[in-house]
Image (cartoon, rainbow, N blue to C red):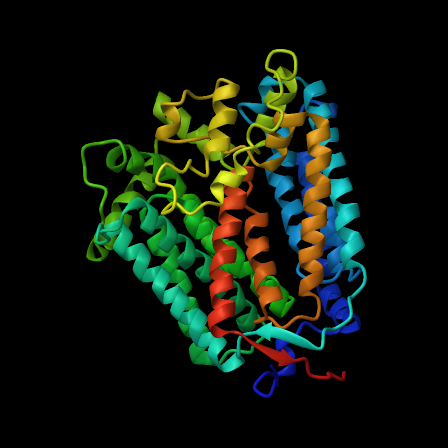
Length: 495
């Protein structure tokens, strides 16, 4: 049974294609400014002494920016999933080639160029396939499965509150859940929270929320970033902020520069003291549980370590730990060193894995409560690190090294694996983006596109982690669809 969108406003819908193209073009000037700045930086300010390395970085950057240009120019419609995915290659594959990355510089300029051609070819092939799905708007369906507008906002606000309480309870040690139950609860809450952050940030940007709702959302987002950082994993806070920022930009068609600068400064500052905190509370003899009332002291101590690092006398000798911190900060976003590793070692020194990290994917779809011996979602990453001698099996129990989808595909099948990955991601991202065109923001199709987009900028995910995360989030969305969504007739909009 379908119902009219009597409680939905036309602004809840993505604009018809003509209006969508016109509004997206508002971002085109910002795109050209950012692109110009990137190329100027790579050519004149990196200090790269190799023409080949610079050429490789420029090729990657150009290919990574192409999908964003198509979307900002209005040539591509729908959720910009592939453009966001491609943009991550600027800082994960392009810039490290010319920024004197401590691991990347160990490889020859010829290796850099070969890696550059590999990444560029992958991006261009993926862009071509994705573009076939999004250059035209599909017919508007007669009905849509969606949340009611009056219920959607309170529902997602409650999801953010649940995430906040879960984070507080988890870091304080208040939860008495077995491993399987904890994983299920965590997956559901994080999945709904990611959806909530995007939807509420989008509607804040498009000015569809009341002032009180917007203030509540921003307060909850700030709280989530704080509680997510307490565990000394800044990636959690960064991911939430990136999701909110992209959603706000899509809704407002403007870039919130001041919040971006403030958050970037804060996260960078805390990063300098992160290793000291981890050394003391992760690997030392001190407790790792933090109560809510201890947050001020916790962040004060953390800030103290960061300030100590930044104000250290330049003439002081740099210890091995300090050197590790510097390298950690420089290497944090880069994964091209792993592609360089595989291209230099395989297939000569190390044979290709021929799908070993993909063969485990079906096992990851089995709920842990049905299989207590279920492998970890990072098992594929463990296989890669062990195969290439980066870690032992014992070392993977403490920490791991993220590879990303492209380097993993090369480790399995070489350049043919990279081409296959481009085809698969181009098809998936293109189809999901096509579903989001002219769909209500609170519809099942649009919310699923949000889930896929949140995974698009997870640069270190292997296929196993990616599939497991997508599966868990999709289950959460499926539950919402069954319990709370209704089928509504699509209103006839005139502009």
